[in-house]
Length: 339
Image 1: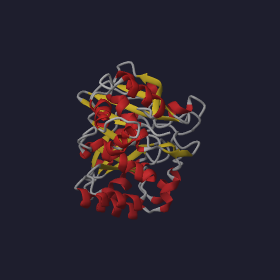
Image 2: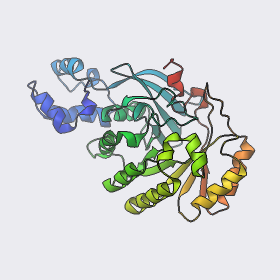
Image 3: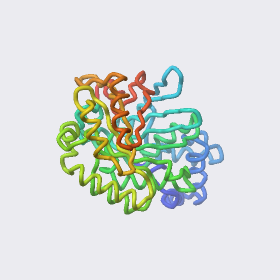
Image 4: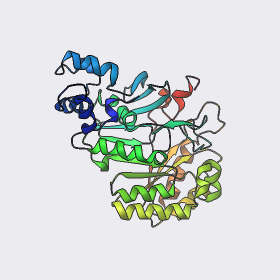
């Protein structure tokens, strides 16, 4: 099923012309969706009733509906469970921190990367999301507060859905769309080297976050099976190329898992690996997943790990825990439905 969000302004105008409406109605609809957070035709009151009735039955405004919305007690983090037209479920997370409002969006239904510790890939991948389904996640979050940052770090591997990823980025950065700066968007990947080069070739200066999770090929390959396709050496070359092409510093995501990759020896190896690269490491204490045996390291272990990596001149940040009470890690809320 096609929604209004899956059409650019020209295609939407053509659709309206085909039913006898003027082309400018397309701009009206897009203004409501992108600038006013009006996400249903019923409340687009500058459209004639006949137009609203026709579009409601023939061209839905939104390709997703909100099935569940779970806020944390402080309201700063909200997990959304969203249903597509084919009844598939995906997740998005809205995170507010002062004036900063970040939306974490999914790019696929499920995930094929099969990371050993992640809930998203436990049942594989069903399909790619359309660009409209990706953008819809941002719009639902924008109803409550202006979105300042977008991260493609939800369910799925964004670079496996490359054409729709680029389409959604173009909508999000289009002056007639949401008009976000590309520098406020970040794409996360397990490290699909050819697609990293493709992303660099677009010249779009989005941030790039690479899921490393291990300082050597053996550790990384055990935790991230898809990473076995490309060595860490190949990955670092792709990261260097991306930085050179876009002027953006690459971030390496590193989930700390007790007994797996969080020992001082791993920290030393990671520091030596990234020393002098100019990259940044984002440490993520593991968020336990029901049905998996992995556990998070103690806070003092996390602090020691960060200190060792930092001692090699590498910039290190540690992600704050914001959404455990709403099962905010990728795929967790979806699994509570039995999917």
